[in-house]
Length: 431
Image (cartoon, rainbow, N blue to C red; front, side):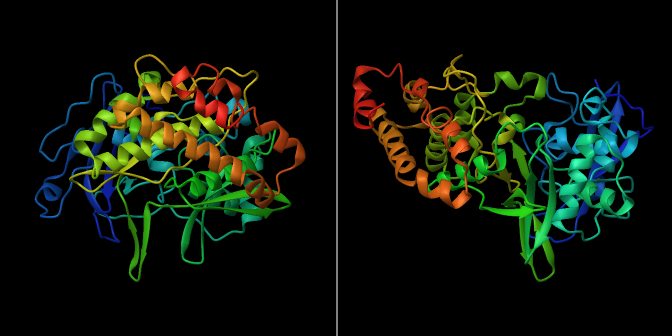
């Protein structure tokens, strides 16, 4: 249920249409019985170039659009709302609560939509007016100042007005880690910072994973490492923005959670199998996309990225078809033992982090066992070939190197139940 402590009862949804650098108002969100419901504006429906926000959920037609079963707001709207970190920034701004204390507070969804920054992921924004678009943007501050702001939010220390505005600019982006939005040299980035709770260098670990994924041949967001106040910062190039001489175009996006008709409370039911079925029917170049998704699944298991939940997969939406976005948020996760499971189900009720689960599910991705095995062998070979080079590029410490290798990366659990037919994988690589 959605509380309404702010007093907001409605929000106007603005959208950047394909090729546009200015938004137009698409419709209105209102609260009703503790839920958020949406209807398109008449003027928007009359536009020749209007597209649905996401056709399977909010088709272009008049009247209040019903919510999908079990949802308290449209998933394609929730995709544009802040996640854990952005919500903590807003809670700090409004209440000044310290890190873990902020976790027990939940503002209403209209507050998160209307008071978070306007440069959010995708092509939507939310305003109190249907006539005047007033972006919630930030002043220019340095990366050092943004890092300092993130640390203060974690500690629950109030920010100065300037730093509050700067960090607030990035409050609309998803994910749980401290982060901010920056622009440099005509490119927009998401900057990720270390957290006070990190037990190892998570920033460098994610850099290593994203670089290895790129070298393996996956379509991933470009990344770079830099330093701020002697601390590591990961810069991820945004793929939902297109620079033009007249300004920035924005690309509509929906998460896999929305594609599957689920919310966070139902996320445990999300599966690669169901996502592959949607890809077959609604995505451009379905066969190539299925192969790419399978390759990402394999790499998640080989790299120890068990945080592959359905918000960490997304698609561009052009009003007609979906196209898989570049991969993002690939980061090895801590594990106390060898056994691990993926956040998303792979096939049926199997989510175990094992290569055998991938091979058994290959047909869902329109791959033969031979093709699937070749993908696994190629990735293992590429990891072994490039591991030391990428770790040196990242400046990974010996301690973190030892922590990641054979625990997160190429953990024996991933291979320990391979059938005899695939024994060549373990034999060839001496697992």
